[in-house]
Length: 72
Figure 1: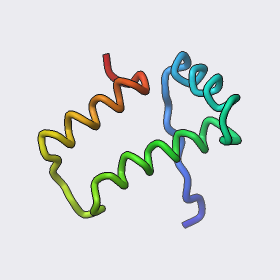
Figure 2: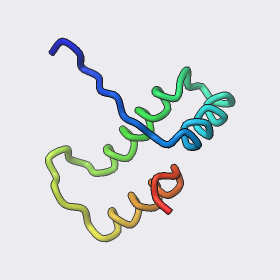
Figure 3: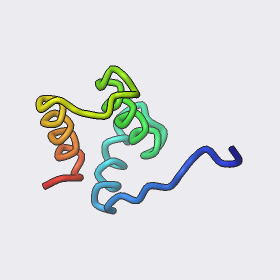
C-alpha cells in the first residue's frame, strides 16, 4: 500500500477540546490521542471479526461517543 493512512474529519470544537486535553497529557498530537481512543474502543470488542454488538456494548460505545462530542 502506498499510503496506509486516511483523513477523518471531525468538528472543529471537538478538535480544539482534544488540543486542550493533550496539552496536559503524554500525547504528542491530536492524531495520536484519537488513534489511542479508537484502538481502546475497538479492543474492548475482544475480536476484530465480530459484526454485532450486545445491548450493553452498544450502550457503552454510544456513551463514549457522547463523551467525545460525536453524539448529543
